[in-house]
Amino acid sequence: MSSATPEKYLSKRVLSMQESQTMKITGLAKKMQAEGKDIVSLSAGEPDFPTPDNVCQAGIDAIRSGFTRYTANAGIPELKKAIISKLSRDNGIEFAENEIIVSNGGKQTLANAFLALCQEGDEVIVPAPYWVSFPEMVRLAGATPVIVDTTIEAGYKLTPAQLEAAITPNTKILVLNSPSNPTGAVYSEAEVRALMQVIKGREIFVISDEMYDMICYGGVRPFSPARIDEMKPWVIVSNGTSKSYSMTGWRIGYLAAPKWIIDACDKIQSQTTSNANSIAQKAAVAALNGDQSIVEERRAEFEKRRDFMFRELNSIPGIECTLPEGAFYIFPSIKGLLGKSFGGKVMNDSADIAEYLLKDHYVATVPGDAFGAPENLRLSYAASIEELTEAVNRIRKAFQ
Image 1 (cartoon, rainbow, N blue to C red):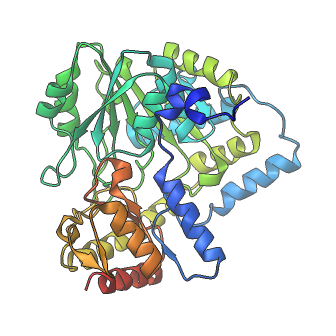
Image 2: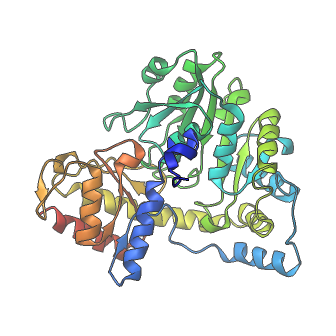
């Protein structure tokens, strides 16, 4: 018998997917660090702050009290109530307990939603630049991602005219990510309402990824489409504790949506992973119900870093940045560097730029190709000012 080949035996859905470039670059940077190389990594999408003490203590208390067994598949009632309070307090949206499901991180909440709603022939509108996993999750669910390119002039935001042009009879879902990973763009209330006006009455769902909702700058606050009464039956809100509370490894995400969608996600989750980590659920209760001042303190620190990166990167010839309004990424256009030679190498695209910075100057970034923007790089400023200063100095030197 001949040896097995991936193309012959793997499913078309898996073969159509790409590996997460953010995880790939982060893994390579960690490998180089393990080899003793002095890498400054701006690739990882996680806060550099530790999980707050009260949250850690709640996890420890859960272990010591023996809270280590299966929980209800959709999450413990105590956490669901905390999520409902958070969404009301911070986002101005009201949900019932049977309209919430807790999952193993924000990725699973989104994957559950796509799997619940999508089938062959459906189209999902995904504005670019996009978070790397959106198109791949759509493909895994059997649907087709329809990528709509936004521009730096529009602040990397989808316009109503672009949305109207992208809609077909097969359109099932619009993905809205605000604040955005990777651009940091935040849609205003007026902008969200204008987009919702386009799809109102057309039986199109909105998956609203609001993971970075508590990390915004300059008084900006994101506006959830679920706040629009006539749209709420069509909106699925995804969020979690990873970014706001430095809990990436705890893996707690949650979805808020109409009960029938939650029931479908519950069914999927019951046959795939079951409940989210019991200990992490107790920790998430402490995060959402506890003193929120630490969230504001860390947000303020991120804002200082944002201002530093915006100023310094824009001072490097060939690099142009918009000012992020949220999240902890900056997404510079490196269009002015493409086609030029550095270190004896011609820079044809963002992958060349990212590889050159990592291998020759020991700065880890993520190429914009992964986000549907081949003329950009994503840099995370979830690092100390000292690390950011060193990174910028190396980048400046790389392109002198």
